[in-house]
Amino acid sequence: MRFLKNSVLILLTLVIGTAVHAQMTADPTSWKYEVKKKSATEYQLIFHLDLKQGWHIWSLNPGGDGFQIVPSFNIEGNSAQVVGKPTEKGKATTSLMGGVDGKVTYLSGKVDYTLTLAAKTTPVTIKGTHTYQVCDDQMCLAPVDKPFEIELK
Image (cartoon, rainbow, N blue to C red; front, side):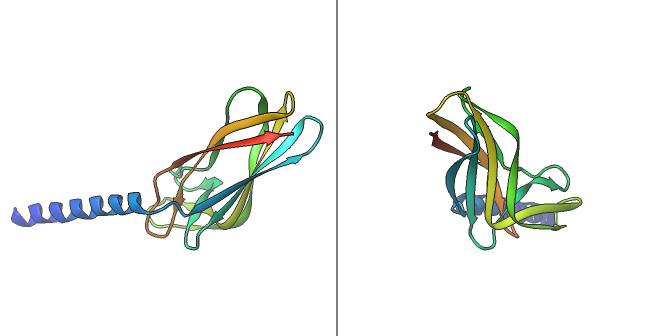
C-alpha cells in the first residue's frame, strides 16, 4: 500500500512539474505580417512565422488522431471576408510521433500562412486573432491567441 501511495505521489509530481515547466517556457515564435494586393478588391494577408530551432507547429492538415491544435485565423467585423481556405508554405515533416495515433504533419523553421481577403472598401484596418500551438520533442505549449492589426490600402 505504501508503494502505491509513493508511486502516485511521484507520478503527480512529474505531471505537475511538466505542466509548470511548459507554462514557464517562453513562446518560441516570432510573427510578422504582410499584405499584397491581388486585385481592386482582393488582398493576400501573409503571416510570416519564424520558429526557434527544435520547435514545430502543426500543419493545417496534420493527420494523426485529431487532437492536434492547428493554426486558425479569425477576422473581426465585416469590412473584409476570407476567400477560400488559408494556405501554408514551409518545411513540412510527416512522421509517426510518440503519443499520437497515426502519422502527423508539422512544420518547422520559417513558415508562411496566406489568407486571401475580399475588402468591401479601402483603406480599411483589418483586426483579428490567430491561434496556434507549438511543440518540441518533449511537450506542447498551451495554445496562444495572438491579436493582429493591418491596414489594407
